Length: 170
Ligand SMILES: [Ca+2]
Image (cartoon, rainbow, N blue to C red; front, side, top):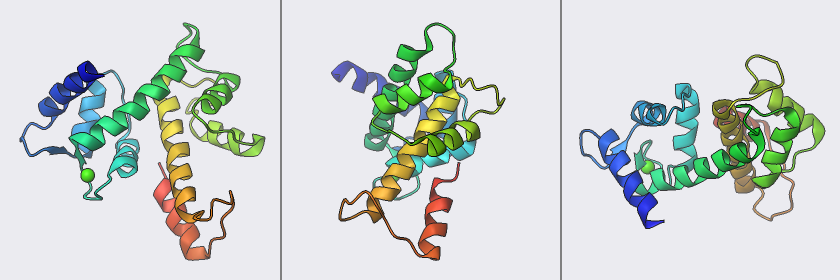
């Protein structure tokens, strides 16, 4: 684990070219591209929102480590399920989400799959799977922040609903 931290630190420092101790969305986007992960800026911004613990809009090293832990978990799940095809079918995606602790019902699952399947072929590559997981995790975090009594159910007024959809939009 210590080794991973030092690799991440070196990576982070390289991206933080101004040495200010934090990186912004476009710097994070290029950092991920170095690892062959190409994401639209909107997805990268969502990653930052998810782990921006001090809410300053950028990522310090601690937040970067937390994000990378999540990305590694998602990449492991992908690697286990892709069986050398380079993509996941809907069945694999369902299993992948379960592995990551999300069990969605069919309408929710299919809607999520469809919105992260750019080619509409039913096959999802790693970057799309990561984006999908970022979305579901953000939705989970947001839901939990409203479900303070841990009832698995929330009641929202219109403003809160708008707030939620705007926060999870990728
Ligand atoms: Ca921050």
